Image 1 (cartoon, one colour):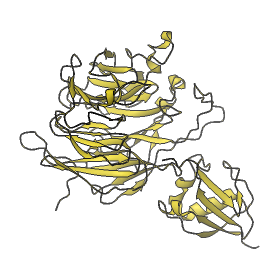
Image 2 (image 1 turned 90 degrees about the horizontal axis):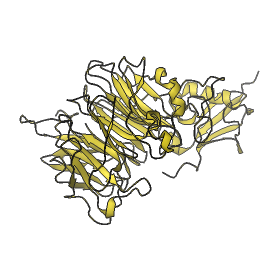
Image 3 (image 1 turned 60 degrees about the vertical axis):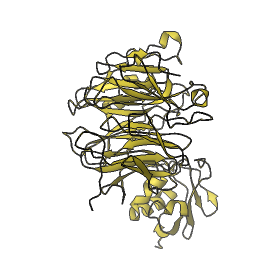
Image 4 (image 1 turned 180 degrees about the vertical axis):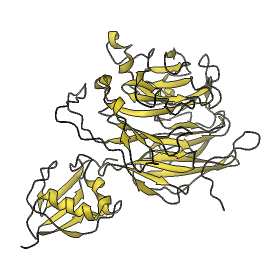
Length: 384
Length: 95
């Protein structure tokens, strides 16, 4: 029997069988969907926090980033759809030169040049087989040319003078949580930084341009609120078929760009709230995106105890508030920034919460089914 | 000259993730002992030390019953027949 390593589509473009990777506080679970029914597996890495996991659709390889806490960050790779895993290299920072001071702008403590978290792993461009990207805390972007056997710090971004302003968002130090490879060329990448805005390279990383103009940071004094380098985009995603179109769920609301980050435009109304962490965008329709709102920065739980997903199909002019199958009372689930994903058809969604609930939708969010209410807190979900 | 042989032993919580059996190595400082150990068992190194070579924040290393305090340089002297024990600290275990 051939093990499906990536998802399949039916002849009519609808989803066939599908596998999702679910990174949790206590291991990596797989959810397999067949004929609309979702089923969980036993976890890999049981007991260990899995920050992020993804399937490289170019060759079917799975990758997982583990945060052992005591024992550091360790990355693993599977060539057989999770049946077996091997440890690969983890991103490592170069020694900090003696004459370099790198202060956390808020704490004024020296930032230790050591990987605290492998926050996100992404495949490189289709024309660059074997290339991977990894975003880390304390803010380094790493690139691998050999499927994770080795990693190199992208020094052009790490040494960018503006990085001195990057500050922690949720964690003590800054981190890269979103890496969006532009399908138009292997040299074009946009990364999202909490807190440091969005940065874009069009030349393979030789140079970087701030790409967060238009965002607003209410957590800074008014005269600094528009500083693109001080922004906290919680998650940034790109429409594969319309790569100039990206969405962000920002700490202070929702923004979208239609020019590859040159300018972001705020979406001020989105159902019960514009606060949240996660966003997913339809792979073929730049006007369709999903969000998982919470009340506010200060109160990070669903509005009125009702968990909803909000969906726009018109570029943010209006939103559907999707509730069918989601708990509508006493729900205190928060969906983290990597906790919502849409598949390559734009029809299948996975959503996981801090409360350990996992939901699946096969119809773009109109209806949800509970896969589990008893998982460990979920950090990431990702269709294979 | 007598070899300076030191037993290095790891707690079960670490052995679960990396190959790190009890092993005798030579060295007159903790840094030398650990270096010799990781030369034989390289897969364990990154579970104990970060990329700077410092002992990870939530790892506790003992020489006999003394908790090591020079966590960056590991300059503590180690005598023959000493025992180096590597544990996970109970701090950092909230997850």
